[in-house]
Length: 309
Image 1 (cartoon, rainbow, N blue to C red):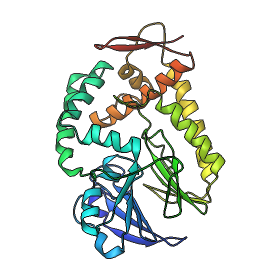
Image 2: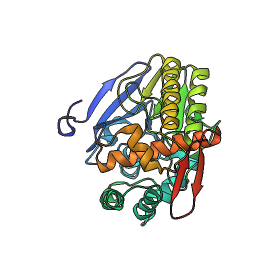
Image 3: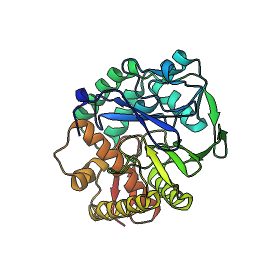
């Protein structure tokens, strides 16, 4: 994939009367897609630099989930267009708890240390978190959406996993999917503080629901459209079952932290940012194993470890 500096804002006319606007990101996957369909703008990018919202006829803004590259530009887009912003009820609550908090990076770092991450790696998170915070400008008090809501003919579908409050928007066989389903990579499914206790279980259920919904085409937040949504969902289910088996194999009677298990599953050669994602992903798989009675958790507020059954 091209470097961040080589990716510019681009408009592409897709099928179904949908336009795709690609915006650059400073980190992987280096870009994010926003979609415009008959006046509804889905997601707003990180909010770095100016985006041509006034010129594209935005009447309403819908957010798939609260991650920075999807919600960070919401306030600017709403201000530029005068359009109302719609966001999932749970998703907005998490948005406020995370991006509206001055101490989230410290809370997150303490969480990772509790799960075995070295202090130096966790401290890097604090620095990065405070550096990113000024760029994340979500819309205050949006119109709230829930499962079964409808927005300009789009059915709101709750698809938790990648984020607890992740929403998809479905109409006439078209699913605007955010990061729920990606064509070439597996969306990150991690366990974080103050989140649902079993995000992988949520995600597997959301993938099964995608198989049942069987949309004709999926427009994701990154990468190219997905024409076989059910097939891709089944691939991701298989991927996570294989990862569960790897995670279980890394456990023994000796207590191991999620950090230790991540070294066995993901290898040792990762940057601090990649390691944090690996630990969060490992935690989501460990907690699923606990619920399946294939692992046991022990510990307290100081240290958490896992053992095999």
